[in-house]
Amino acid sequence: MKVEVMTDQVETRSFPAREGKAAVHFREQKAAILRPGDFPLPFKLTLDDDQQPYKPGTYELCPSSLESNKYGGLDFGRRIRLLTPSPAPGPAAAKA
Image 1 (spheres, one colour):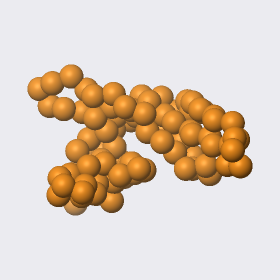
Image 2 (tube, rainbow, N blue to C red):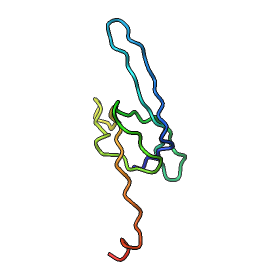
Image 3 (cartoon, rainbow, N blue to C red):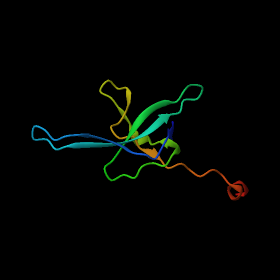
Image 4 (cartoon, rainbow, N blue to C red):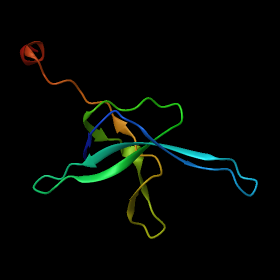
């Protein structure tokens, strides 16, 4: 499954501390699932606190991002991971 990262800008959402719980911060990037023959499906990609943002481009969805739900269906996990895109084949790769 292909994912297009739209921008390397990170948006931060924060929720203040309350009722003895610590403040919570979410770092997100804009991305979209690419669907052949259909429009891309936009979503927000959540980053870990110390994670560098993904550079704009097309990535493969990491299989560890998927999990089974309580009904036996397929769901996305809390953290979606992307695999680094492989470089496009160049002249050296074509000769090999």
